[in-house]
Length: 270
Image (cartoon, rainbow, N blue to C red; front, top):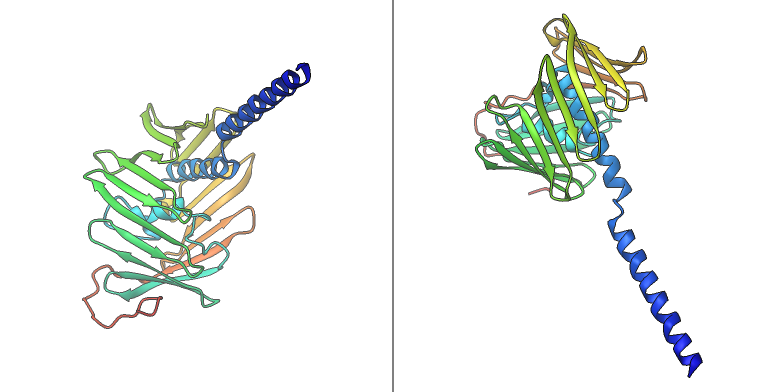
């Protein structure tokens, strides 16, 4: 009898311990998702710091939604961050084509209300949808859905994902505050003419000096350049370089006002 009671108590203790471990493991955040959210935070801070919306790279009518789709993409460049040279052109009247020197191709269908659909050369897809007057939705390559809210001047004010990530951008004296629910906080303030500084709550400091008409922008940290964006005034090509080996030159000849032409083949062959 004592043995049976002992066995029962042991089984009960083992079951409760296992249940506790399951609950604890369930509450632990996915490290890859946590990292992706931190990357998104840094990209948004860089965008505000440089005042260089990527609508100049990927133009669209509503809130620069293609630029924000790019920011939320895995590598930040629709998968072309290792391509060196990227051409953007008209594949069809409302379809933007992307092609690099290696022959990798992608396309983005663009609707007038900001709804867009991206098909990547590696099979990845992204899409956007206009949810309300000042709200857009973006689904990334992994299927995560982000809700974006914009202020009355069409500036990004908030991002929240359906998995629980939240980021807000607030106007403060002489600049902006960017914060999220992963304890990331950064204040972006103007120091002097063309010089802006982003100070993180953990002590990290980024600075930039904006060039004339935003033709040259860079971000530096600890006196070293970490991101450079140049616009060639003659070709209008955009050159992007960072401190971890990325070098990407984007040539954009896309014309959103191209006359409708019914002769078109998607990458899928339809």
